[in-house]
Length: 416
Image 1 (tube, rainbow, N blue to C red):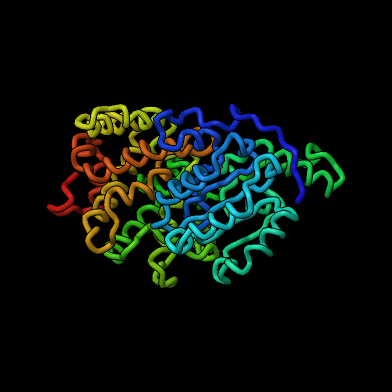
Image 2: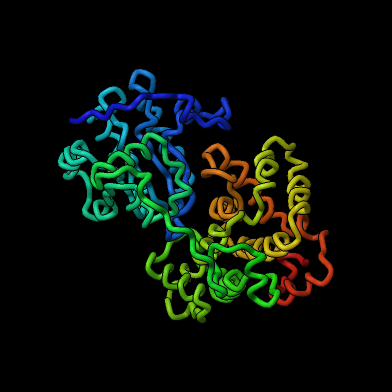
């Protein structure tokens, strides 16, 4: 089994925002397991970085397994993806084969059912040996979920590369591999300048751009059309927003929108297509809907006394730019409606928050850490559950009528 030489530097990979009171602080502080946004199908991505594993005598592998299960427990009810960065696994930090075998057995159907993709980056001969050992245990169905990727550029074809928070050691290793293959240093590769967006562009552009290109409409067309469609046909669909959709279909729909062509969701026969498109639209905004300026205030929600948290949310929302407020109000109004049908769709405010939290707010650099999930999801849950109290008092003259034309609420959901 080959050994990859890396220097373990704990401070470089520790999660600086992690509370010492975290139940798995001893493991979590190393940053081995990370949340990394969404893939191209709208599924949550979890990364596992071997180069961040300290020597075996410094890490309890049983605790590592417990922490991995603890992390996945937050997502196994939804479709999710795992990215495994193999580089950095060596004789000093490698768990035993017996541990690996028992670990695989412990991940029962609950964890495997909704795992839709497992990407193994920079596989080595050790992976091939493992495959031979585990092949009798691995079902054909599970085996089809595994994809081996020899470079980070290959990984970028499947998910949003900039959200991954890839360890520096892995990036350097990938650069070295590319240099050996191409015979030239990375600096010689010129990155072409980004193309200006199309006038009809809908994804990856700002709210202001969409307003300017859509005759001053405050509600982005993608948001308005997906919400209207889901309101009419998806409110009682079990697991709405939990499931992914075909990557090819999502790309096709995005292309149609970006080219200014009409989209008829009935043509796809899958209610999860507009649901994923809605999440994708939010995640691809250049700045999160809740804005970078609000990030620290939102993280602070857990430090606020329980009885004052709704007021804290209201203060944060009141400070949003006018356009962001209008769009957020429209979206949260709809999510509140979805939560009111949770007896059918099983999507409570808490469940919706787990899906939408990271689509509404993320840090200016990198991906949100696992320790940030609790406050981000709590804040989002409060927005949904206490929609009327949080959004009821702020009115924008001349703009409220615009939303009222799009969303008409009944007595169950409150009023604007």
